[in-house]
Length: 435
Image 1 (tube, rainbow, N blue to C red):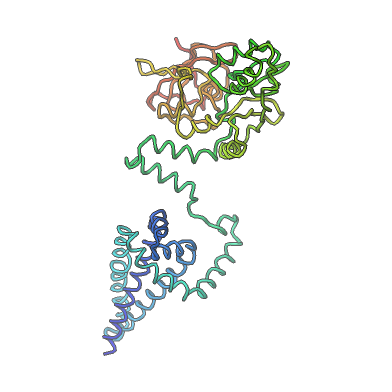
Image 2: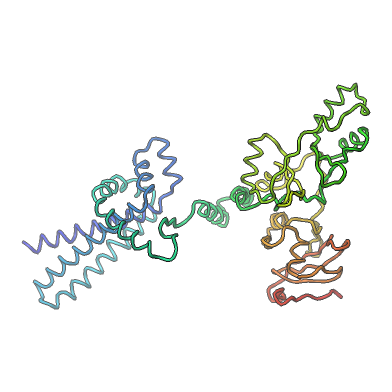
């Protein structure tokens, strides 16, 4: 009779072990997004799942404590029965049998099922887990105190507030995975990735450089300024005085036309500076996320970018930031974009000022943009020299041929992907002149 009770107890303990293992797998694999949606719809079980997952260390501590207790107790009972039946050699029999039973029926089987139906199992086990968490809290608190006391002596502090996977990287990984599997369209994945990139990019990475800015001398005759503004493809134009870097205002086409109407459409009576707004200067180290928030807060769409010395480096607009998310935005007034020109032989001719990020997005390449913003900057950085027209460099799996140069500025480059066997390492300053 005693043996029958012990066997029944072992069976019950294996079931409990299966419950703990299955619960841990299902709760950690459950979709947080779906649980949140179900909770919003009034599902109480989903609310319990979210509550349990809000403190994962408590759930894991409870599972480990409970699982260890039932496994050790099951092994002890099995050993007791085996010794009673077979003597001391029964310990070996009990160890082998209980190990097989726990691995198959208490670990592999429940974990596999829980992983396949994570959301469904999580909704079922969450109420029971919540009760167990409360019941075992004193023990888990004591264990947590001991663990944290030990971690204090570790070299770093990362373990003290461990976060296995940051939400930012988790979202990015999910997007990449779904895009590879075809669940999310490539364009949608790029837009979602663009949103995540906003916090990693600075305004200096995407600004319009000062050499490409369209500006107007405020001392020019009003009629000439009016003509320049009407010919421009932009609605906002920076005004400078004495020197191009001295920006004194930003002229909006609508404000200019309103002022012109008040002078009976006589340009000579215009006061250009009175029609312009104050320029807004931002540091070149501002992140795109912060700059976007500032644009929305100030209800402005253009800012001048300055470096640490207060020198104007370029300008950035709200549209520039949005293009990092949705891609190139064009309207009926934009000039055709011919900075990236595909050739019939498979090569690509690009202007030196083309941003590496734009080229990567346009052609689905992966050229690095850590050390340089433009293609010309990348070539100069890798070549460690200012190359001459006709020189060819091979790095990062691409062949770069310098087509044109103006003074010290590379203006045109031909790029062609090459196989790894044809790649010459730039690390050894490998470069050769085209013949």
